[in-house]
Length: 368
Image (cartoon, rainbow, N blue to C red):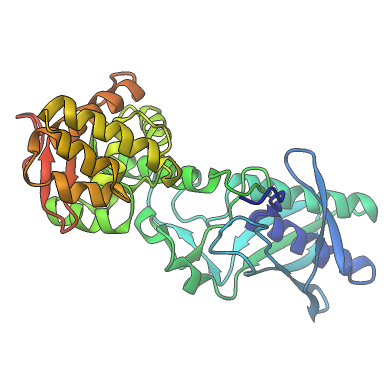
């Protein structure tokens, strides 16, 4: 593994704040090629400006290319723009609007009210700071600043996100808690999980179906056809974090996990985060359970020599349902512990064709 330090980046919110600052400076001075942005952590960074264009006597547009650093990000290299309209006012006024490619909130449960552009509080604060800094630099006091944030490819990018399910329509969200993108911090993913949970609760749901990705979710939707789309949350590898987010909202009472066997074993082992790097340990523990439960040393050897948990599953299913039951019960116990016993937990383990191999269903749970 390389020891190279991963490069930090900046969020869409920081890009928007930089575009605002560049556009506003150009009213009073030469258009800048870069601006310094103060992140909400107090750190500062020079952000390059792609372009500044005067649209009218009182309107200027600036564009920044978002840089996610070494973090995999759908919006990496996306253009984030700001159009500034400046007018006289009896007192300083800053209006932040969403333009083309910025989504609109259409469902309750998010950090912003329905009808607002999806520009989160962190980015709004950074934009306000940009305006204040420029006004202080040029000793400007009584002006109205109308800011339109836009993302030229925002509608296309939004199709690669879960925004529509969260009720964010027409484009992407302008995000960022601090303004900094830390590679592999996972903050954005966890924020998406939290948003999904709170939107579901706000629409009156009390039962959610957690899956680890698109494929398991597709099968889960087939199993639970009567459930609203908002009930399905892709939690990725974030086993404990997703439960932590759920417990924050007391309206949610029940979680149904629908998972494939590979993730299931890691969840059964109590891993808070089920990343693939733990595969070797996973197979050793699974082999130990196998010999304890079945008394079959040949099965233990097959599992130990398997390449992956999926490979091991081919030796276990359907001949050893008691081993799959052991894994399912351990997931349930771990999830109950992670949620401090505040949630009812149901676990479904799927085979790789989507058939249910284990279901911890109790009479109080919804039926398939």
